Length: 567
Image 1 (cartoon, rainbow, N blue to C red):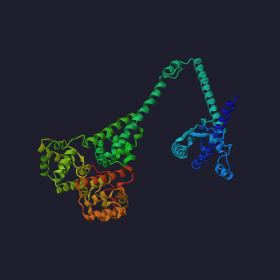
Image 2 (image 1 turned 180 degrees about the vertical axis):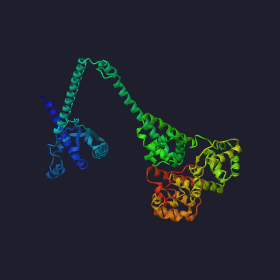
Image 3 (image 1 turned 120 degrees about the horizontal axis):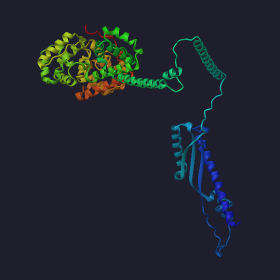
């Protein structure tokens, strides 16, 4: 073996020994630190170093010159060379670290969030410890694939299996006994010369689909099941659509139900199906009193209604509701439709010549656009008069409604058919035609069935003076000081009620602004009021607020859950 080969082997051994020692130190240090954050059995750490050998400087072997030979001072030599390393040295002085890689293996049970936290810690720790030469790597430790082992059967399981086998055995014996009995009886009849008709059993079984080959009955049965599942999916889909539409039609629901019930049996079925479909969503339906008994009778029979029939009637219900939603509850008839085409000035002039009741009814049956245009032409007193009339309207006799329509049609060259009309939807439509700043003032002192129905079904800012203190305080905690200031600029009469319920800081801000008497532009006022209504609606939608429970004293009409229809 040559000297160079021995030297190379010695260098490699030194490098491996140096790497192993340094890597063990790094692993030990990082393991101790990470164990303070994660259980030791949840991770494993390894380190890998890349080393580079440092070339030593060759010693100066030149002989000492004559001039260098002189007196040696031992004390001076000790001072100069005492701090130098031992001549033997160690293997670290021959190598330089090029790269340090620290790998951390984590078990999947730790979860993705913890893995991200540990990865962040590792990168920061390696960078701080080793700088640019340090690299941190995260791995997921793969465990053995879990194999579900079936538990050994218990005595009870074995007993059940034995019971099943015994049942099958008894059934087989019974069938065999039946066949033997049938053969005996058949032989006896043949011996007695029975004149009964001969029946080909095989043909009969083939006709019935019970023979050795699969007859049409099996395929028909599977087809029937498939059809029923398809029908059930369609029924569920339409029912879900109805549940989405009905809350948008609450003010007009009684009118729609009344129109259905006038049609007889079909209408009763539609009403009963609607009650069954949306009862858990909106509660009791506003069924006219004179139809209540018939609807209850049909409601008890709904469970026996076939899927095909149920789907057919649910489709009728859905499309009637969609027509009412998009076209209004008067979609089947169009009284006062001539008002939508006439100039608003002409309409205003004609209606001013008639009483307030007729003006209210006519404005109800205008289109939304025509109604808003008409309401904008009225002064405050005229609007107030219409609102007071609408608050008192509940139902209208057919003859009176027909006379109103007939009297106006003469001005516009149109006629209407005879109708009986529920007026409960008049109030919400009139409210929607006005800006919020006007409704806050117009509605606050109104009373009547329509007002009560409106304030327990629609988010309104006009009735805070009738709310229970706890409900009002809960709502006020969700609005801003700008919104409260805008509201109190209209309803200064509620200052003593609202201010004590506000948080201290907001109360101070609002009080100071009110004392300064700053003016708010109509556009800003409307924007703040609209935001308050939106927050009120959000509370209702989330179930944080029940309007019916919010009021201090129920209306005298609260118990009238079924509005009486026209006699």
